[in-house]
Length: 241
Image (cartoon, rainbow, N blue to C red):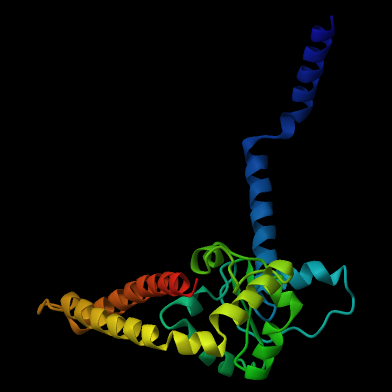
């Protein structure tokens, strides 16, 4: 009996939803798309681009005493200033900071990610010494480049203080640096020799155009530096310990 009643309820609900035709669904989708487009342009209109606009729009209702927005390029709606990451990113960012007259801080958006950069050494020092910077979110690149958050991306606390004490006592103390001087010269000479012959082998093809020649050099150099960095770090740690 209960099953029959539930079936009747389903049929009654379906009869009430007769107005939900394909045209109505299409109109509803258009309204949602238009609302999303309007909000995207509202977010994009803020200094720093869409990610910062979204952040300030949400925080506006929670904090009525928000600070003055950080100057920066708006970029493109939705994707922000992705173009700043092409080629020599540090040159592009420095030029953009000068264009925006961002003398101390500049904000821009990389998609949904908010980014802050500075070209001022005093501001950079203040940021690096801040506990907020020490506890910043860590991306996958930090795990890959910094040996699973070693000392560079370690959160402030017992773990970081222990690493700092080990580095100051056993790795970078004057006695240890003096003791490893000969070994460091040996590694440097090996690196230069290997770097020279690797580049020579990479560009020995006479058919390479100047652009391809430069690209081959940069690619080989980047790969080589990455490998040598890992190898040198491993050898140094083995020698020290």
